[in-house]
Image 1 (cartoon, helix red, strand yellow):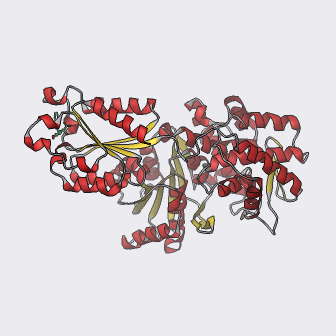
Image 2 (spheres, helix red, strand yellow; image 1 turned 60 degrees about the vertical axis):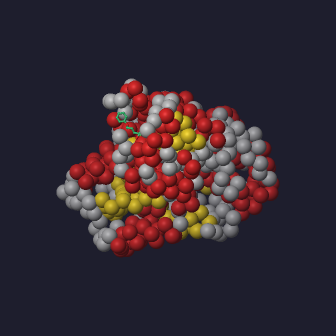
Image 3 (tube, rainbow, N blue to C red; image 1 turned 180 degrees about the vertical axis):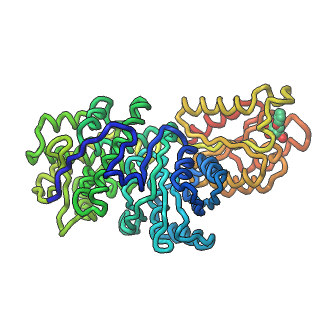
Length: 529
Ligand code: CA2
């Protein structure tokens, strides 16, 4: 029998745990941004200047890598960056193999450093490459998502998926440090907040006390919280995991409690082919099932079970049509089977969990039926994401707009354009990456990277419109719907401006409407998606 949890969350933002062991492996949170995380790395390493392999996904890298690397290089670090497309599909041995190639080709040594900058996929992969290169090198996690900050980056589980099973290959390899810059969460999509909240709620139910009280007061979806309250609860939630891991790093006992809600949760993810539910959404449903089981078995008082269900059932979950038989079948394939028995983490009270192995099959079936019924009433669009992502790209000289030739290009400055794009995107729930470059190759690389993440591109290639076969080829190659925009009406100007080499590979062209043309293009791409 696994010991019951006796965890009390503490109050300060970065409190010591595990008798100060965390000073050697600090896990720090701040409401600051990416530069803060880089400064923490510098401070941690003191006079040491190991070479750094920065591992990230292309989307995270586009937003944060430049500022992160700049801060490190200014302090004398040499940084090699390795990025890959975003998404779970990258958690493969092939990806590890290519990271190991980078480390070997760049002649990294055991006393150099890997930094994983990103969500769970990035930190899992970066940590695993660090675990096995040269028999193990140091690594640091800089989580950029809520799930990463409260769960994935903490605890030292690193690894990749096997075609037969998720997370089947890996190693326990504790990061030298975890630095969580919570300012980055300002741009996190609501659905990602919801999903990440599942691990916070799980910690709240395991630990009880102030952590659970905050959830009971503000609701189970941190996406709906006041940001300052969310910033307070994130480190508290992470501490619960840190304390459990400190006592049972290799999941021999106590750490198994962290699987609360994951038994049915994994089964739901698996039957829906990992496409309907985000992990956290499935865990929310799994926790509701575990609460129901706990009550049915007489462990948890009905009143307490009802109060928890009331809070958890407020969280929006995707609609899914699942048959109970399929769900039960998926449960049987759970890798957490021990000696042929499933380990169920159940609650005796808020803050008091235990592992149970023998549950009558009829009760599991009845719970599976209830869960399928609940999933059948889900409300969230189940496409895996709700907001569309668009790259807005401006070519040479457009950074100077508004400073001359107002009769042709208008009075608006580049900063006005960015502000109006952001305002429009916010009100239309669009995620934007806005970039301007005077360099043809940079524009091409941004178009290439967009193929892994963008639902559309709005491009004003500037004068390259009339000359660049390379930009035209890049647009054609990536097959991301692209709309060409020009501030001026190029059809009414000099002969050389009347020709657009990119027009034939774009889905549309908007000219002569100033900034309004960009907004129209966003609207058009929104409708197409
Ligand atoms: O009308 C457009 O948006 C253009 O793409 C703008 C390009 C031009 O080369 C194209 O033919 C048409 C860049 C114009 C230069 O941008 C400035 C505008 C005002 C002040 C300074 C630079």
